[in-house]
Amino acid sequence: MIIDRVYCLPKSEDQWPFRIQAVRQLIEKGLHFTKPVTFFVGENGSGKSTIVEAIAEAYGLDAQGGRAGRKYVNDRPKTPLGECLEIEGSDLPVFQRQRKGYFLRAETAFGFMSFVSGMPGYWEEDITKMSHGEGFLTVFDAMFSEPGLYIMDEPESALSFSSCLQLISLLHQLARSGSQIICATHSPILTAFPDATILELGDHGMREVAWEELSLVDHWRRYLQDPAFYLRHLLKREER
Image (cartoon, rainbow, N blue to C red; front, side, top):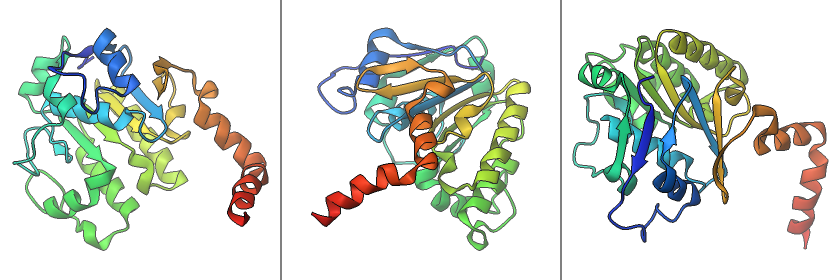
């Protein structure tokens, strides 16, 4: 494992994001990683993106996304959690010294990808002439190719069903090569990755959950079986 544990000792817990329950739990107990692939799952505002972004910063990755050792926006300060987060791992010094890692952040990915296309160490293809999904797959093929720490924030946002399956195949290859993957997601497809750790975040904080017990899996399953069960309540509210 590249990262075995993360913990945080903030100077003050009164500001955002230290009031989020998942972040408070991280401060109180730390967070241990025991498997090559870990997913953070939860509703918007639950803290999953905040935590994976802070891990990326603590490792030395730009919070805007990109490769280890490269800066996309040099004058951007670290997030409050990234400022105080500490990481531990038996293999960590080796990978940090070799600058092995990549952070794909869906929110800023397309702007970053367009900016670095054609630069040495990235890819030759012109991302601006592709769909978002094709661009993401180009990044995965070019950047996710050797052992390292790969952090992703909602990578499924630009991917079709079949592209999500392609990503799972790539993650499987990376995990077998000695990589570690940490991913925040809303995708029931990605979280079905075999033998991954799934952490569900919410008002309870963080807890490890089996895929079939995830709230998002339950909601997707019930919605696909009977969309009207959900939609009739929403549409009735709009008609009032």
